[in-house]
Amino acid sequence: MSSSAKKVIKVSIGFIVTIVLFWFLFRELDFKSFAGYIKSGNKLLISLGVLVYLSSFAVRALRWKVLLSHIGSFKIRELAPVIVAGYAVNNVLPVRIGEIVRSAIAGKMFKINIPATFASVFVERVFDGLTIALILSATLFFYPFQENMKTLAWGASLLFALLFLFALASAFSSKPLEFVRFLRGKFPKFLSVFFDFAEKFLKGAASLDSWQKIVATFSLSIGVWGFELAVYLLISAAFGVKIPFVGCLVMLCAANLGMLAAPTPAGLGVFQGAIVFALESFNVPYEQRMAVALILHAAQIVPTTVIGFIWIWLKNLKIDTDAAANP
Image (cartoon, rainbow, N blue to C red; front, top):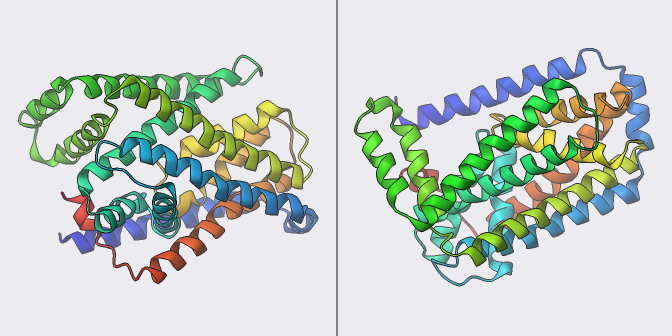
């Protein structure tokens, strides 16, 4: 099967999953009540949420600058629009193709190694996952969640803690990469995709070549999610959702843990389902939960998609995802 045919299949599956998820979300919705909640949203608070979210890309760019420092020296104003462009592509295509696009853009614009750039994005995702999992685990001490939520929290924390430790080992030793290459030769060829992922991740982890860089990356990851949390607080307030602070933490964690592996464009359906599920524990009416979920997501994906594609158009960029995906 050709690579173009595989891409068509992946895109088709992503859109089908999106439709199915939204059918489940909307099938029992009282549309009159839902419309009332949408109309009642405080436009000033929603606008502030959009501005805060866009501001977070400066922190994301600073974090990426740290991770790319072993390749070269870059300015935040150079990296931020590249990240936005990657998010824009993620918002219209499934399976996080935007991560590949971001690496390809950076490689072409800055004349740097695309696989190494792609690997740095893997490391970003590990730090994002670790930060979110730690936040979710911390909330367990402040709110009596159901057992299934506790299991999810501890499981996610353990997974990303192991990945983080693996990244640390790779930063200071070549042994993990050698081990992965050894295993590749022992397993069937159809499993090579998993070993490709592992090698790219380990190459990216090699950029964490000092404790100062590790601390800086983790600190900036906390900063990134601090901005995100502010957006959740603003949009929740815009719709009059009265939940404790920990409720917004749960929303943030549930939505973004789901988004890390979402097969749909922009995590559509996955994001809304996670928000609806998270707010259920706080007795928020279903229609109000859906209003928050849709506007919160729109506040993030609409401006980044518009700005990202305008920037791609102005730069006259033609993106070849195969260059990054198959180094």
